[in-house]
Image (cartoon, rainbow, N blue to C red; front, side, top):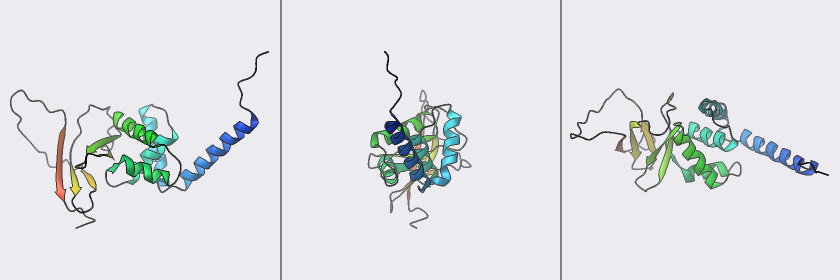
Amino acid sequence: MKQSARPSPAKKSARTQAARASSATIANSPYLGQTSDAEQRIRATGERLTQPRVTVLAMLLASDHAISHQDVASSIAAHHPIDRVTVYRVLEWLVDVGIAHRIAGDDRVWRFMLSDTGTHARAGAQHQHAHFTCNECGQTFCLTDTSTKLNFKLPEGFKTSEVDLKFRGACAHCS
């Protein structure tokens, strides 16, 4: 006689309660206003819509500056449990699908920021805009105003795949 692979009512109830608790926690998170936009952007990729992806992307959507993996993990953990490795994998996935990009910090820590709106190109597409790092608070901001085109002449045989230009000074919050 073959036994059914269905979970016991107690296990099923525990999973249902955990899902409700997770939903309630997200309902109380400071990124609530960004969750529907996050869900829409993830669905546009054709990839799976998961709770960690929505939460991490909602946090990036709510941020006005580039944030580190540690910043994301700490902030999210304050509202609901999430594994640091999961946060890292979600950030890498967001970069791979072109929703976010990575910025190398002077402290050798990657910071993550949303890519330009409307850009959902896979990794490898050119990421060409400048960044501004504040000497006072250390925050990094994307400078996406493309009205000023920089025209550098590269030596013969050189081909650009990415431009990384960083300005330093005091941000609007610190100046």
